[in-house]
Structures are given as C-alpha cells and as structure tokens.
Length: 158
Image 1 (cartoon, helix red, strand yellow):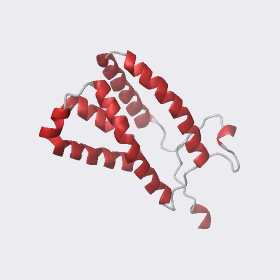
Image 2: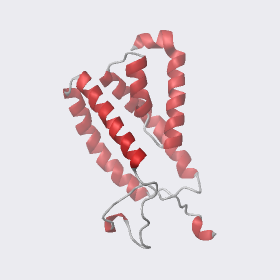
Image 3: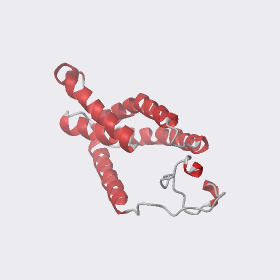
C-alpha cells in the first residue's frame, strides 16, 4: 500500500475529492467510491480497502454532518442520530470481526452483491414515502422511513 504513495499520490487526492463530493452530495459513505477504486484501480486487497474507507469516513463524515447541521433548511433529529450511532457501534464490531474471518475474494463478492441490491432498491423504490399524521413519531409507525419526504422546518412559516 505504501507503494501507492510514491507513484499515485495525486490519484489518491483526486479519489478523496471525488469520494467527498459524492458523500456530501448524496449522503453516501465513502466506501461506495473508495473501496471499488482501491480494489479495482489500485490493486489493494479488499480488507485493506475496507479499513481504509472506514478511516477516511470519520473526518469526512464529521465535516459533512456539521455542514448539514448548520444549514437552517435541514432539520436533523438528534434522537434518531444517537439511536443509529448506538446500533452502528455494535454493528461495526460484529462486522469487522466477520470481515476478518471471511476470505478476501468472498468478501469482495458480498460487497458487490450488496451494492447491486441497494442500487436496484433505490432505482425501483417509490420517490416519496407516505406522509404520517401530525404528532406521530418513529415508534408509532409500522413502516419507518428515515428519509425526509422533502419538507423543511421552514415550511410552516410560509
């Protein structure tokens, strides 16, 4: 992996710029861009690419989250964030343990299948979830969607 630094440092910076733009614009984790690029273009082993993507994600995600948080047109629910973080902390421990036990080629195929499933689901899903009644919270819904249907907290002022 260190050989990449001497020959392709500029390509890694461009990869970072592209991953940042995609992540900031679409809200995707950098792994969608970084892992395939490192594996397919830079011949990095799958597990090393995944670890690198996780390390890159932390500062990039924090900066992006702060920028979204400061935007007055975007309402972020701290309770939702904390609950997802709690689940993600346990999940990443289990996931990294599982990834450490799986052979690299199998892990690469699982990653590819996951990307295809997510892509198909995103492409075929209806564009707007049904709006819930006033006063309902996440626990009162049978079909929970964490995606805002498009409104902003400033809509009530209009």
